[in-house]
Length: 291
Image 1 (cartoon, helix red, strand yellow):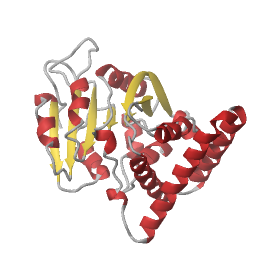
Image 2 (cartoon, one colour):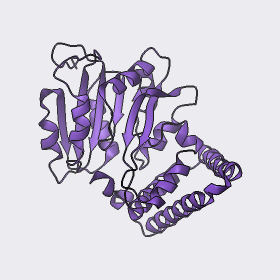
Image 3 (cartoon, helix red, strand yellow):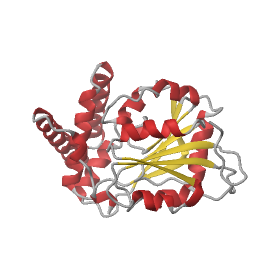
Image 4 (cartoon, one colour):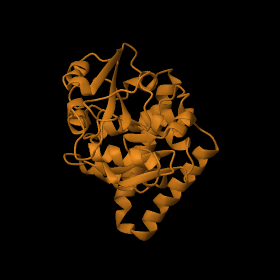
């Protein structure tokens, strides 16, 4: 496969964006990362949007950004399958996987590419910025605790963007059929092999309704159950210690901790009940953050 080019610049990295019914937000992302040629960052990206199982105008919106975006489509509503299709469509490294509902700019993508292309890391994620405007107190309380869990604050989980080097990609190329792809990518790399690039910022839009947060937690719980093992027990133990530490240091935050525990347990029970009935987590989609 020949190296994709945009304008007259050499491609700095490939960007794979899996998108399922994201017509309301895909333009928000692409407007920040697509250009007709090199800009002041010197970056040109091979952007591949993979529309999977879309019933809306996601493909049309993505195509409207012109030759800077290649749009693929499949009837299969699967993020993992979409990532595989994106991988097959480009041979450019570093490779950056970006969720369609987050926001990151070209400079941030370039910083991530540099971290895994000469920076010595196999994988990198951006600094996470939670946009909680419009979210009720219960949702804000949950995320105030969640964001301090070690696996969240120091890992690749919940950032919506992960960059890998060519060697890092070889580590995860199999992409098994898992629901929680964040967790799979995070656990594929040791702490010395991954990094969080503080100069790159990804804006993540959490749910704006408690019911949608519970749906998201149920989905995550079902995904976590697929990847149980010693690493799962270690992460769970570290998270419990972190929550206990918050209570020791800041007893006034007990209400927020109680909310976090209740929503976490509620999502887990919901997910377990769904799994016992033979259901899948596909239906557990948060739409409020995409409004």
